Image (tube, rainbow, N blue to C red):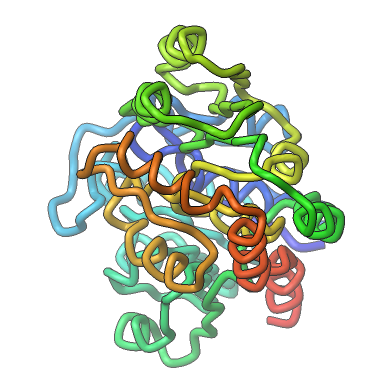
Length: 359
């Protein structure tokens, strides 16, 4: 049995995605008999209670007093790297881990070299290729990323796992893939799923609903909105939904996202990790990139024909109306679904586990 320590965070600023994909990997490791522990800072909007409910020990770190300036995402840490090193060194050493997993844009080689014990392997999960690492294994699950983007940032021995074939998806997505793809061969455009991130700090969900009020949707259309349990604008979204001319169901903190995606005909979704969930199930998507780091992957996904981009800088109602008119035909939906299904089969966790166990 191996011991694995995860260092990751969730917050209103960071969002939920980093913790959620680490939880997916941790569950798979636990299923194999390994022991996983989390270290997470106590940001506003943290998911430490959720991690505990999942049965994993989590060490909460208090907010620090300093902030670095050398990394673009330094404010996401809630402390300086020196403070984080001081807080983590003893915790990690006491665990005597075989693997350390770091999934945080505000940590780089300085932190990694200071806290990784001798004989411990290091897995870094990243999406940016914007800083140096000292890891043994690096995972970037994004479409359009190239191994050469990382070569100057990594030690020579580091093994790279690049692309959505290694995306960390929960097993229910792969389990529902076949049925979902069969359903799409005859699907029309009725069930629309709106999911713009677990936090959606700037209430893009509300903006999309307001824009859809001014659109003509197919007869019988029904909307389902999914938000995270810590989403700060949940009540505002529910109020907006009650004023829409179509039935709108608003859900929060659900545990059956794969089932919801498999039952939808179209998604209005954010970039990031949820893109690979939708692709696994062949769910056509109107893709809204909510952060700069989501843009390369969003453009790459649109280039495959798996999604159509919606720009936040342009009027949402006009773009959404054109998109619905364009893809209303079953043949257009099927083409999007087929392109999406070719991006990933949803079995990335199995591939990552095999490599971790080999190393």
